[in-house]
Amino acid sequence: MFDQKQYQKDNSEYFKKYRKQYYQNNKEESKEHMKQYYIKNKEKILARVKKWAKNNCEKIRGYQGKWRKNNPEKTRMFNKRYGKNNRKMLSERSKQWRIDNPERYRENRKQWYENHPEYTKEYKKQWYETLKGKLAKKKFKGKHRQLGFVPLNKAFIGSEGHHISENFVIYIPKVIHGSIAHSIWTWENMDKINQLAIEFLICT
Image (tube, rainbow, N blue to C red; front, side):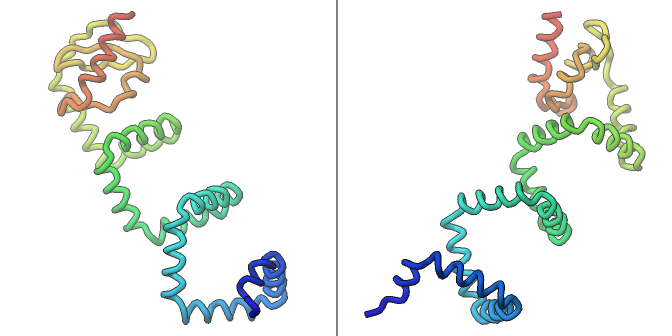
């Protein structure tokens, strides 16, 4: 008995070339046929694709990575269009990720700022010109006026004053001061940054 499936499997290269050539010679007809087939079998096709994707995650990531690398311009256009059409969903997803991963978010943000100093400088400049920025600046200055200022060392080029407490200040390199996000008001990460400041003071 003739086994058609086995025959096609044994001659897969031939049929692949044949289908490709047929498509090239009959593009419009083939497109319309595929469109109609998809409309009639949409649920069935989506279920099959979903199942295949679930079982081939690594392969898909490999294909996508390779395609993005070879098509940077198309990738940018796709990302831009996708972001525009799904702004609300992406915003909510991003917000939830920041809530679930606060440490990673701070590290990623800090690294991005370090890699884009010119953009960061210009962005801060423009932000402080907005009403929200002006109010934040005023609030920040108001809070710092509540702090004492007793320096434990002298300022130097490239340094920033860091409050290790409400009164005492240690001048440390700007890069160290910005290496850990901290707040004297909530005491978030103050133990970590204070340790670096004190070690710097002792070693200099």
